[in-house]
Image 1: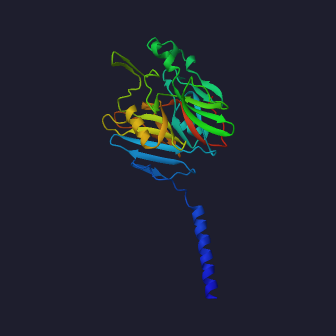
Image 2 (image 1 turned 90 degrees about the horizontal axis):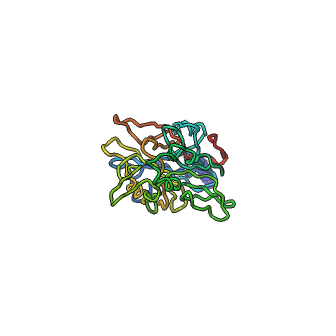
Image 3 (image 1 turned 90 degrees about the vertical axis):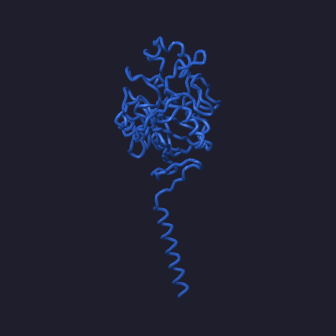
Length: 308
C-alpha cells in the first residue's frame, strides 16, 4: 500500500510539473557569444529582443526567424507618420523605420514593393529627379540596395540586393524596401552614390558615414534569420555609431548580409507597445520624427497592409 501511495504522489508531481512548464513564459536564447547584450524575454514565440550597451550608444536588435508564423512586410504612409502610430494602426508586433524620403514634399526617394506592386517610386519624386546637385549621382541613387522577400514555390526567401538585380529563377518578388548602402559583406557607399571622392578628397557624404549618429539597419544572419538593428545615441558628445562601426558590430552577431536604412532622426524601433528612438536633441530628449515608410512584423494571418 505504501508503495502504491508513493507512486501516486510521484504521478501527481509529474503532472503538476508538466502543467507548470506548459504555463511558464517562453524562454529566449542568451546574448550571442562575445557580445555583452541583455536579452529580454518576449511574448512571441522564437523572437529575440536584445540590447547592447556601448560607451556612446545603445544598440537594440530584434531577431526574427525565417518562420511561417511571422510575416515581414513594408508599409508606406500617404504623407508621413510616426513609427508607433503606423505600427498600432496595422496591429503589428514590431516596426522599424524604413527607407529615405524628402521631408519637404513627403515623397519617398526609395523604391517600395508591397504584395508584388510598386507602391513607392523615386522616379516620380520631382525634387529628386530635377535636383541639379544630384544629377551626377542619379543613376546610382536609383539603383541602391534594397531588402527583398521572394516567394519560391512554397518557400520564402530573404535577400539584400541592388534594385537592378534580377529575381532568382522560379521565384517571385513579393516585397521590397529600398535603403542603402550595403553594409555586409562590404560597404558600398560610393557605388550607391552616398559618398563621392575627387582626387582622394571626400566631396559628398550624404549620410555622414564616418560621423557617429543614430543608425538603422537590417541583416540576414548565418541561420537565415532577419536581424533588425537600431542604434540609439546616449547623449554623450559624438554619440551613436559610424557606418563602419555598425558593420563591424553586425559581424559579431552572426550577420552575413546587411544594409543600412534611413538613420539619424528617423531611427526608431517599435516592439511590444514601446518605441525606442535613436536621435537625441540638444537637451537629451528623443526626437520623434514622422517617417514615410516602415517595415512591419505581423503574424502570418495578417497578410495585408492598409498603407498603399
